[in-house]
Amino acid sequence: MARPKDPAVRTLLIERAAAMLRAREPITLRSLVAGTGVSTMAVYTHFDGMDGLWQALRQEGFTRLGARFTTVPESADPVRDLTALCAAYLDHALTHPDLYRVMFDASVDLEDLPAADATLEHLVQAARRCRDAGRFRADVVPLDLAIQSWTVGHGLASLVATGPLPPETLDHGPFLLHALFTACGDDPDGCRASVEQGWHRPAADDERSRPA
Image (tube, rainbow, N blue to C red; front, side):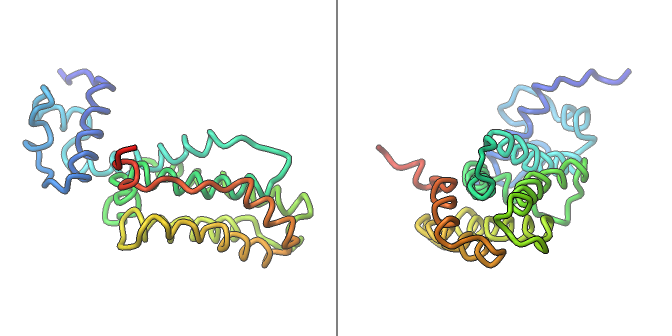
């Protein structure tokens, strides 16, 4: 008889794997369950083995990103909202740098590809609102702009969360978004105000660890 699945155990193993990634510890079947109080069989029960665990770990990054996007309120200023989503992307990457590293590991399949793709839709809808409100030109393609906005966030996050540059690099975000949005037709002064209202620089992982 198959063992019943306990969501708490599944979450425990995902969090354990993420913590090991952050500590750069080698992840094996036995090292994963060490000190957790569960047996190696739990990895098979919940993930069908280590390959399934890696898939779940990658999916978890997108799940948390989607959840983070839902916390961004919609306002009367769509450019402000699109900026806030980009800042939320950075916040996700810097809050979960371990999961962020795995999210874009194409050597591992995703458990639910459509669910992962749905995270981009938050940016697409915000970009569409910008165009429909007349802030951007009528020929702006929301999907293209969403990808361009994601690229800005991904580039900054990769350089800081998983790369060699200091947290101050994130301060280039407003300049890059302003350049992107004005290229789409937004008024430079109005765009600057919207970006400033929507932007906040997330704290990088090393900044969070500093004493107050």
